[in-house]
Length: 214
Image (tube, rainbow, N blue to C red; front, side, top):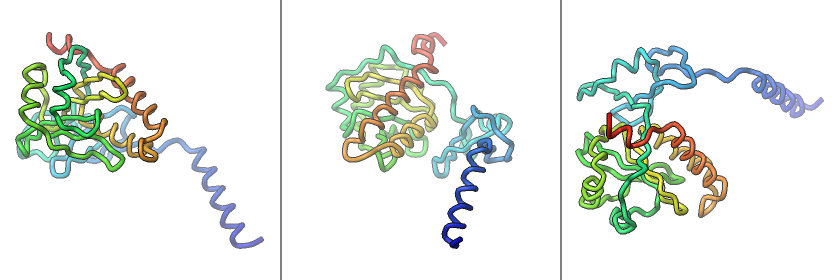
């Protein structure tokens, strides 16, 4: 038996063993406690990375403070079914595509627009007067929690999806696009995944009428 054949068989045996094993559970990145599939997330201030956490650790960062290294990311999303924006208003945002999220940065003290792309989240120059006009037409945007909540917009392929969404969901969408994008236009698979993402987000989201009466 050749050494090459023996090594290949060993690799196949290892793959079979891995396929029979249960998935490795995630752990809290602060205390290493095993986590359930649904668990809190934190935003690390220094690099804006998402950190998985247990409830006990996450609760330590539930209140905003300038000297805390993490911010707890909210779990709830809200669908803005009565969002007011015209095509001209959207064009004034000067975004290269019709898929974007907007975050109020406490560090930079301004709203930043990002659009997901095959290269990751890309910052786009935002016309702040256009943003202020949108806030005047949609006062709920004044209630965005800085850094950890975003206005998430999907106007691709004739859609009109508007959400106040946790920032980890925006990063999840970006990762999905990076993983599935093919060729120049993305390919059919990535657009199916984007549609599935927004359907799932809508299914778990509350509606703006509930927010306005909170």
